[in-house]
Length: 214
Ligand code: CDP
Ligand code: MG
Image (cartoon, rainbow, N blue to C red):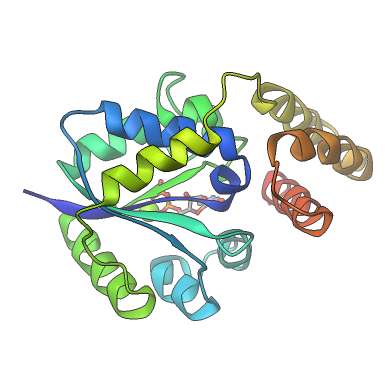
């Protein structure tokens, strides 16, 4: 059975109800078993090593910053990697199938809520790395911990994903409106991120804007 790394990225950890909804979708998938669940603050060293394959790309500095905007929720998932990747959907939110995880919950572009290893080899490399640097280990209580997280943060309340996307779309069409879009993102993110302080919200808004304009 294949095992690989999946983590909820900061945009799905800051937006608590989004993270809870994604975790529920993983639990609902009977083809996948979750063998670990751990909140991890990603160090710069881990971020750079994890995304090493992208180090020469223009979006690399953004990627290292974005993955460190808040803790991530890391999981070891047992299941066919191709199925996990299909479940997440395409890398860019606008290109992801509307019923996929990124299509439903991602914000825009590369602000796409979840990471998953892309092959068996990558899975082995990433699990080794995250074990070594962040002590990610199998945990018999993983599913119980996920259920507790969902219990705490799951909500049937509306979230602002569609409004956030509309602002991102407006920004792609009118990059000169950057400051206004930034100001408009803040109250929406405040509503969706119940535990984040203003500093974290402002940083999150700046990260979304930077990705849209990459
Ligand atoms: O995450 P995935 O394996 O689908 O995509 P990747 O090509 O390995 O890229 C890693 C991450 O970089 C993506 O998930 C996006 O968050 C980000 N990215 C981006 O923002 N802009 C790009 N042109 C490519 C990737
Ligand atoms: Mg990848």
